[in-house]
Length: 175
Image 1 (cartoon, one colour):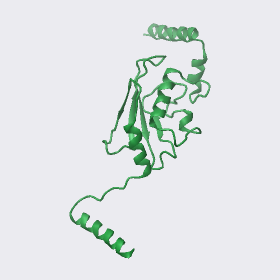
Image 2: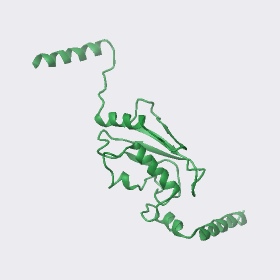
Image 3: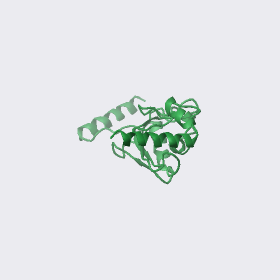
Image 4: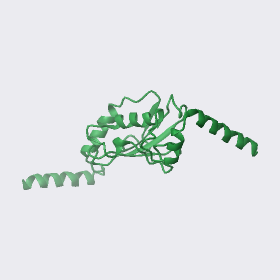
């Protein structure tokens, strides 16, 4: 047993003497996230990018462009930060795009049940992305994070459209 530790230590010394960077160990969370990302089946108007390069899979961004609903034709960027404890702990998700939405506050925090109390290790990044996409096609005003936006969402569409038209008319009149 003692010889094994000596061999390991000698190997580490040889690597540092050769000028090679030490090999970084991958956590179980890192390996699971690599698998989840390789198996992604994104909605048709969603993209993923790695701002720190392909090697940093623990931090990435997803852009969601809904093709229906009130947020149609918008582009919303979400940053994902996974901890080494992933999948036992959900990734931290923040909306980087300012948006007036019942389930996203003005700081970018997201109210999605699978990111909080309903998270289970069997869920994955694909599930979260589809959940975020669904928030834009059908916002949940019953469990809001932004109560003001939820109140507007609860109003009948006719009243919302009239309110939006009145706001536009007021803006034009004040010019």
